[in-house]
Image (cartoon, rainbow, N blue to C red; front, side):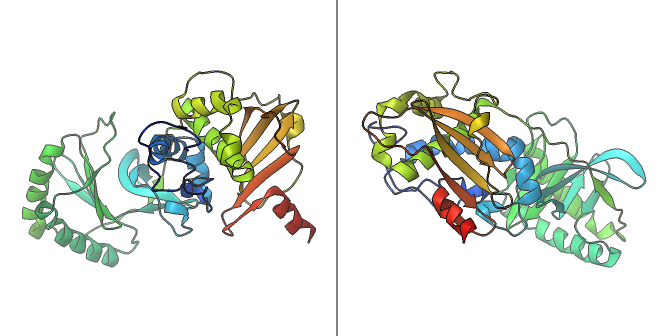
Length: 341
């Protein structure tokens, strides 16, 4: 039975649910059969917003990890805003931010009467070689016109951006039907292109941070996953947790599951966790289970999960820690034992 969708009809169980999202370094999963594929489909949207549009995206950009928990430089390709040494106006570029550094991907910018090429190289010789290599690759674009369209809904600039990274083409173009004509025109004029000049670009990242109800529910899902990991699927399937469970899945009812910061001050645990670790602590306040979910040791949400089911045992304090930088996860007592030793 799915711990989130319970006994709904036609549920399938092909995948496994990470306790902490894999995109921020989560390692271990719940047992197969705990979370259905249909529930995971719902949660993909919640996690995507949390990881790419909330304050989590800033921490992930500065500290890591990259895609699926990798510690190698990687990230979601997007529009970046830059200024150069000679011009204070913003220029558009394609790239990503990983572990505190901005990375350009090789790309071309096409405007009404001109175009420019950008890459990571700093010497004119390397940049020229990269430019001609890019043009040769671009000649294959129209033969296999599959690309990732990353044009924002509110994009008002007439500049077209075409980049290549990790075996994929990325395009920013308000009128995607015209993209192939623009490329054809560029390729026809490539023989007239002379040398390539370069300038040093300084990043000016204008990320839009959104702390939404979806983000609150994504944090809450981590708490419920930890409760399942520590106490089992039968425990969390209790109807005592239905309000919290239904809120995670659907956002309804919109009650006060997210505890205000001051309510749980005394339940903060006075222990030093690993650098940039993610953790979830479970505590008992009166007869209710409360959770503190913390990502990167600084981003916290606190929740009332529900009443302790009748006849069930619950430890006064419990928890789970993800030390993603060292690729280790612990329950609370395991972590305390490593400190003592």
